[in-house]
Length: 174
Image (cartoon, rainbow, N blue to C red; front, side):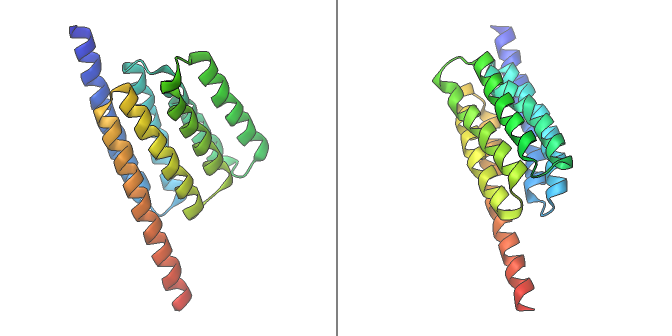
């Protein structure tokens, strides 16, 4: 029982680190900064999900680290995107435990498409949908910190989209 309690506390602590990194990332209007911070946040999320023994979510979060690194160098590369989608499906198949893994899989697939093929507001819309899937995955894993983190990521992402839209309007009126 003590080990479970310690693992749970460690998972919550790691999720708070991920929360801080993600909030700073999604508050940025620069895609390159967003990607770097998300790389570190997903390392924390992978550790968090492993501590909660949510293996599909942990595996996909770890894979997201590779995806972010690839997308920074090879944006809009269809073959790499398809490879990452396939890798996401393979990770899910190898670690699948049941329907509770569906939200993590959906988040991984949405995020892969959005990051490789989109930018600016369309990318953030797709990442916002992925964040909602991660909220569900965190709820199912029992992660309080992760649930709060992904909910705040969703809201921060929406606010940033509004800021980007306002900036675009101001640019067109001047």
